[in-house]
Length: 245
Image (cartoon, rainbow, N blue to C red):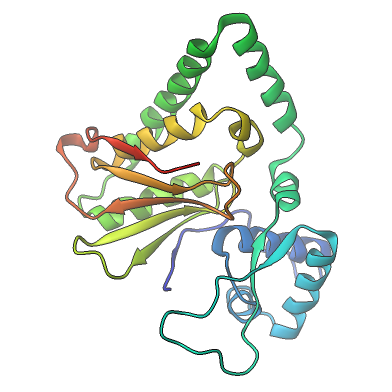
């Protein structure tokens, strides 16, 4: 499946920076996974053998794992299939830094002190702030390019986002994939965060979106289906459908 990849921060490390290169490999697996050693090698301008050494260390550490989606439809396996890697739960925690548990504790306190409605209000206000910040930067009228702009903004905020075309549907469709979520740990307990985010995507893109999978629900990426219909006025209307979590 072809991928339109948003820029991934931070910048590539200096040559010979083993720890920095390994971190870069981890970030790219989050952004592009499921991804092969060969694909990573082309992105990093390294040899496949060098990338495999980094992947082996990351797999041994438990920060990445092999993703088996089975053979492609109508294709029989020939020879040894390429290994496709995704980030594990432990790897997501490493990418997330040290404040995820604090955020979860704060939301637990909010629910205990003020109830479920306060949590929903917090998630809605957090989402509204993101919408206000992103909306002026979504300048494209073409819906595919608009989705790409959203992916770039999400990537800059640490979500390792990309836009991937979907073959087959009668209505042209793309999938917005987020290989990392800075609030995943909290979202595992507070689904209001994921629901508010999906509503924000709908507002920003001006169309119905459908959340197919989430990192918080155990998937290797958050995946949102986006039909490529032209955005409504100002790209700020449209409903949201939530897939199963």
